[in-house]
Length: 397
Image (tube, rainbow, N blue to C red; front, side):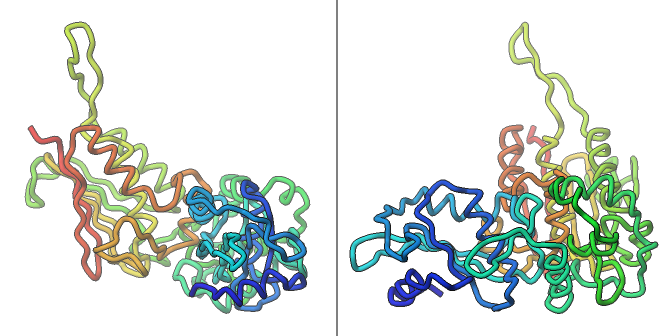
């Protein structure tokens, strides 16, 4: 809900509050992101939003800032550029004061998946200033998450144990990409605390989370039976046609995604197109970037509580990707794909950390652009209550 001017003026003057930060800067992205991260962690546990006020001096007076549309866009991009993990919930507003001066306000809501990191570091509010969390403070944030976690991937995988995870895969393949190297060198915590700080272990229940099992589990389908991809290539355009090839991609998600990349390269043949009498170029049946984005979207947003797999069916004239679970949260048939809500925010964070997602909220649009450039019609989407179907048609002859 937007602030009223009287509230904003009171906040500008309240120089002692740990829920308010003022700045006259307009281009200090690191500073802004650290502030957003700290407010999202809500270390004092106010369970109330924090506010970053741009155009306000330390003494509470306005600086005469002119709030441009570009500045508001840059502030809104703090949410989706992938540097703050998991994604923060923020609003960005422009306010005009009675004096004629303008203020930009970033409202940051407490995360239900703390600890939140900016570029691998956990920032918190300590009184009216920002600081990097100590090990003790980080552990308190991790323990708080166990109480407030709402998302399935952040919940404990009950009856599983630490032995059900490949700890080498976590230490060697994931940790160096997720946590700042200085923090790792100073780290004296045991492995459970390290996993918990990244939302892969529930310290209260003393077991991995569902995200931990998905990413590093030695046998994920034992705990989550639908956590695999079923690939089938058909000789024709119907499900009743003969099968040319089939494969089940299962195991920890890091392995599954690597196999999926190999599968796309194996089956996506290319052929030469003569552009001039002396020049030709290679043309793929389907643009790899489009297939990859749409499949990553299915992996990231599917419902892992369902026992059905992701179905990746390759026909002679089209491809279908069907994933369990319909649209989630604020996403609707009217605002898709402009509006994105994350059913599995821990998993989304991990895929961004590992480089399988470049930027949040733009994968479907990027795939549509790649399809158009390759001469394909746009991908089509069918939304049902229990599944999401994407159809990618071949090039029309």
